[in-house]
Length: 225
Image 1 (cartoon, rainbow, N blue to C red):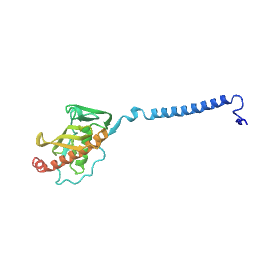
Image 2 (image 1 turned 180 degrees about the horizontal axis):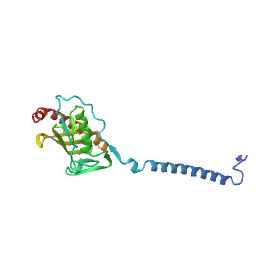
Image 3 (image 1 turned 90 degrees about the horizontal axis):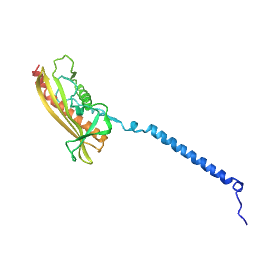
Image 4 (image 1 turned 60 degrees about the vertical axis):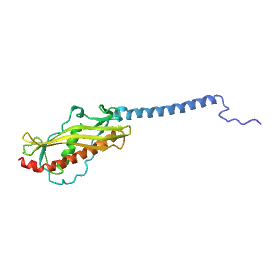
């Protein structure tokens, strides 16, 4: 007994029709894949995903100072040119501690001196003790100079945020007090995001040190009036 043939396959040209059907299905799949690739290129171009912007995040909850702070005027935090940009700097101490680099695809929303100015003014305002530098009040002038603001790598998988700044309290051109503050905070990851988190924590630690020091200058600031 001969096998029963499929009605369509037994007709002349059935193989051609099957080949055409397969070709149409393949063309449809290729078209879908091409559309997906085009969408991915449109939505995920390097320009769209490579420029990640960071700030210092929400400010920590402030607590009243142990002693009342003197009323001060404050200008913008100053910094050398290397820190006056939106670059997130890092230093590989275990390779060459004299060389700094910056992340290519991650940046600050503004330069570190501006970020620190906002953070410090907010912390001082919470204590009710800060005026803008151009006000005519006779309060002493607080100036802050940022010397270091970078992620330091002590090993391939170990890094920390390092912030160093010098604060000066003066009145009428006379220096009342001056001190250099340094703060360090470990990074959770060896990446730009890890460095940003560490620098945020180090910044808050440095500001806490500065506010405690400023409270100690209250008697000196009062005597200078």
